Structure formats: C-alpha cells, structure tokens
Length: 215
Image (cartoon, rainbow, N blue to C red; front, side):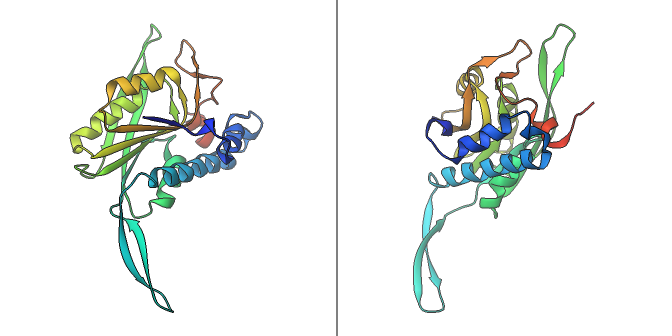
C-alpha cells in the first residue's frame, strides 16, 4: 500500500513547497525543521494504524480510561540525510527504539553505481513495528538494501517506509523487492528521474541542504 499525502490539501504541501524552493533552501535550519515537521506528520498518520490498549489513568478528580499504544515502534533511518526526519518521528514515538544505517552510492567510471552499507545498528526487530525513513526515494535501491540488511536483525510484524519525496520508479522498485507487510508513505511523488538517478523536479540533495556540501 502506498500513501501519498500530497493528494489531499493539508499543511504537508506548504512544507513541501518550502523544501523545494531554491531561495528558502538557503536557510539550513528551516530546511531541517521542515523535514522534522513532516516526520511528525508521518508519525501521526502511522499512529492511526497501530494497536492500542485501554489504560486506567488517575486524574486529580477521578479515573479516565484512555487507549494508549500497545507497543512502541523501532524508528530506523539512513544517515545522514535522514536525521531530521528521524527526529520528527521520534518526537511522537518518543519511547521507541532507534536503528541507524550508513548507506551511500558508490559510483563507477561508466556512470553506474551500487549501494554500499558501512554501518547497521539496530535492536532485534522480531515481531516489532519498524518505521524506516529516508527523505529521498529515487531509484529505491538504498531503501531496499537497507531493508534487507535490517531483516537480518529479525522479521518485523509490519514495516512502514517513510520518504518525503519519491519517484514513481522508486516506489515501483520498492514494491517489487520488499515483503507484502510493508506500507510506503510519501509527502509527494515525482514522475521523472535523471540519467544520474536524481528526482525531477525534486528538491536537490537533502543531506547537503540540511548539513552542507560533502567531499
């Protein structure tokens, strides 16, 4: 299942417009904050799909029965661009565990590239809810490689893949290479990828815009 939040009018589209805007992008703090805001919105939307248990809460004036989360999810992200999005998700699932993955494109002289993973730190995922985030879902190769690496840490009961901006090709690639118990969440989906596998119109390199150019 794929949820594209831009298909309904909401504040999501305001944040996406600012993330795309080349003038607003010059403010790195605002760029990071907008990624974090979207993470909070994704967390709220995903929370509607989770299981709840009624809890008796004592107030100053009486007793209230309130449905609360039955379990906290594991929040996984791909370094470094995913950190602001991770922060937003963790703001809402504040008691959740975290997983961090270092993944990058290793480019070859012929213009092709492969996904290299250098670090995977994760708790056991057996029968847990996993929320795996990366701001950009271009070809889908990074998120699929990360997903498969995390499956070595246990099989979640359900996985939510969260991306701020995706390409149609990337979404289809993910759907073809992950298990059935996976839901994809996007703020917007663009149709085009360049020959270098960048999303068009996209927004540029999310990691560089959030934290500065890398060598």
